[in-house]
Image (tube, rainbow, N blue to C red; front, side, top):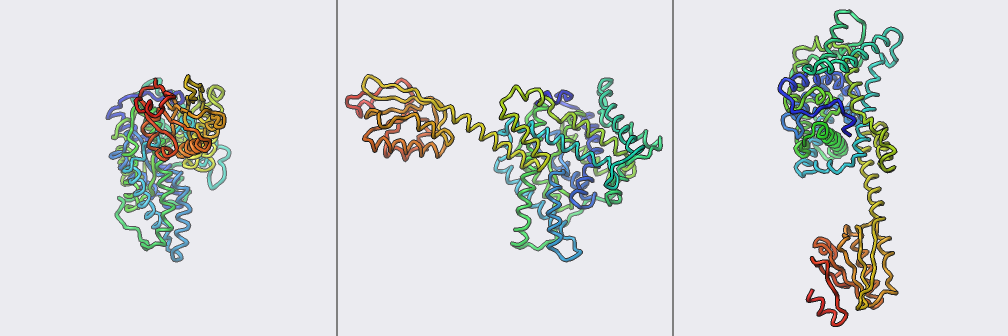
Amino acid sequence: MKSAFKFITPSNGSIKDDMLSGLTVALALVPEAVAFAFVAGISPIIGLYGAFMMGLVTAIFGGRPGMISGATGALAVVMVHLIREGNAMGPDGAMMGLQFLFATLILAGIFQVLAGVLKMGKFVRMIPHSVMMGFVNGLAIVIFTSQLGMFQSGGEWLEGGAMFTMLGLVALTMGIMIVLPKITKKVPDALAAIIVVSLIVIFGDIDTQTVKSFIIAGGGEGIKAGLPTFNVPIISLNLETLGFITPYALILAAIGLIESLMTLNLIDELTETHGNGNKECIAQGGANILNGFFGGMGGCAMIGQSIINIKSGGRGRLSGITAALALLAFILFTSTYIEMIPIAALVGVMFMVVIGTFAWNTFKIWNKVPLSDVLVIALVTILTVVFDLAIAVISGVIVSALVFAWENALMIRARKHTDEHGIKHYELFGPVFFGSIELFNSKFDVKNDPKEVVVDFAESRVVDQSAIEALNKLAERYQKNGKTIHLRHLSADCVKLIKRAEKICDVNVLEDPDYFVAIDNYRQALAKI
C-alpha cells in the first residue's frame, strides 16, 4: 500500500503546516459539499453546514488527528431516497423529507455512538489488505468520475474554447502541484496552485466556470449565510415514523462508519501512527446528532480531503479545526471571494488526489500474489464504483473469509501409529472447524481401529460448534463399535466447548506432550499422568 503513496512523507507536522493545510482543505470542501447537497436534493448551505459541523467535532474529539470529515457522496446517495419518500409521506408542498433527514441523522448518530461504546471500531483492523487496495482503487475511480461532471454545463459537455480553457487550467493546477514541491515545501502545493490559477482567471478575465456559477447552475444562490441554528426536527414521534427512519439510519450509520474507519486505517499507514477507531465512532456519531439538531447534512470521513490534508503537511487536530472554521468563515464573511475561485483549480487538485490515492502497485503485484487476492481487489474496486463502499467492503471481507476458510480446511493432517500396547494414536495437525469437518472425518478408520484410540490435539485446535458436533459424532461412532476414544492435549477453552463429549468419551488436558498410556490397568495408568 505504501508504494502507492510515495509522495507522502511521514512527519510530526507543525502549527504552520496544520493551518495552511487546513485552509487548503476548506477551499476543496466548498464544491464537494455543494455538489453532494445537490445529489441529495437539498440546499447547498445544508451541505456546507454539515461539512463544518462534521469537520469541527471530529477534529476536536475524533480518534484520528489529520483526518477530515464532511458531507460525502456515499451518504448523499442514500439521502436521495430518504428525502423523496419523506416528502411523499407529508402533506403536499410541505417538503417533510428534510425533517425526516434530520431525524434520521440523529438516530444514525446514536447508532454510531453505541458502536464506539461497544468498541466495534477495532474490527476494521481485521479487514484484509486486498480489500484495502480495492477500497482505495474504487474510491479513486469514484472521485475521478465525480469530477467529470465539472466539465459539463446544463447537462451537456463543454465544447470548443470552453473545454480547452477548462482543460488548460486543470493541467496548469496539476503542473504547479508537481513542480512546486521540487522547489520548496514551505507552502502547500495545492493551496499555491488554487491561488495562482484563481489570480490568473480573475485578472486575466478568463471566461470559465467558478464556484458561484457552479452553485447557480445547480439551482442555488450562493454560499453566504448565517450561523446554523438549533431546531428539533418537526416530525411525529410514533412507531410509523420510527419504522420509516430506522432502516435508513442503520444504513447511513454503517456506511459512515465503514468509510471513516477504512480512511482512518489508511491514514494510519500513511503517517505511520495509530488512531483510535472506537473514539472516532463516538465522535462521528456525536457530529451527526449535532447535524440533526442544527440543520446540517451530516457525513463521515472524506478520503480525498484527508489525503489533501496529509499531503499538505497536516498532522494534528489543528488542521481539521482550521478547515472547519475556515469553511464557516467562507459562509459568514468571505463568500464573495470564495465564489470567484475557478472550478478548474479545484478539479486539478482532486485529480492529483486521484493519482495519489490509486494503488498503482496493483498492476505490479497481480502476478505475484495469490489469484484470490487479485480477485478480491477487483471485486471490491468494481463494487465500490457500481454500488457503494459498504457493499464493496462487506463483500470483500466475506470472500476473503471464505477463501481463508477453504485454504485452512485443506490443512488438516493426521499422523497415525499404534504403540506397543496396541493403542492407536491419531496426532492431528491443523484447525478443526466447519470447513475441515469432512477431511477430519476421513482420517479415522472406526471399524478397523483397535479397542483403544487416542486422538492427540497438541498441534490442532477445536474452533467452532461444527467441530464440537463432529467430535461428538466421532465418539458416538466409536462407542457403537464397542471402542473407547480418548481426546488428549485439548486447550482449556477447547475443553469448555466440548463438555458434552465427556459423556461418551474421555476428555483430558495434559500440559506435558510426552505421555504414555498403559494397556494394563488402563484407568489406573491414566490417573497417574
